[in-house]
Amino acid sequence: CGEPYLRKLSKEVMVSRHIMTFGIGESSVDELLHETMSQMTNPTLATYAKPSEVRLRATAKAATEAEAQAMLNPVWEMVCKTLGNVVYGADVSGLAEVCYAQLLRRGLTLATAESCTGGLVAERMTAISGASKVYRGGVVSYWTSVKAEVLGVPQGLLDAYGAVSEETARAMAEGVCRITGADVGVSVTGVAGPDPDERGVPVGIVYIGLATPEGTFCRKMDSGRKRRD
Image (tube, rainbow, N blue to C red):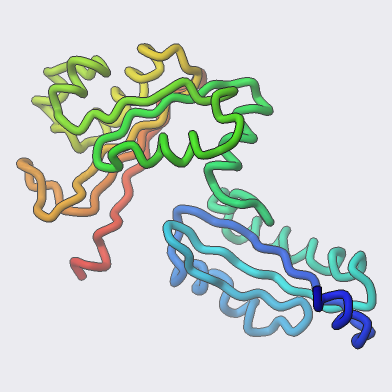
């Protein structure tokens, strides 16, 4: 209610754009952008660490909203060029919603296979209104036997590499696509703690698998590194 009144008291307009990133820490973002941010006066750019992601707020001040928005465009382009594909959007509500929109736009369906996250990925997706248009279902395969018997991860692979491994994450993602008929499968397997697993894989090690029509991919993440250092 007070914003229109306050705007009347000023001849300038301030506009902010929230740039969203995932898969990079705040210290890494600051290292890459610190020199540029320290020299900026209008627009300005600042980092904000949020659970599981880092957001950057770019703010410009100008005579009109259109002029301020135009000033923010080069900032957006600079951040995207500097940080690359860790940037997943601007002024969006979150990663799950962006994934939903991309799946819907491309006419693809998704299924999930989770271990250490216990269904949290599925929860994030199904919390979105209209999720059934893209989300087929998921499997929480906390036990190794469920990975083998439900998702179809070969027992020989589990024996050779363990439940927390790139090979298992790939097989889980492919398996959930196979049993649900989804175009895309996302898997998560890792060590939540409090102790390393039976193979000595440290707490915090997580493998995320992605099965797509173009192939299967995997990324290793270490969310426990800071605690161990």
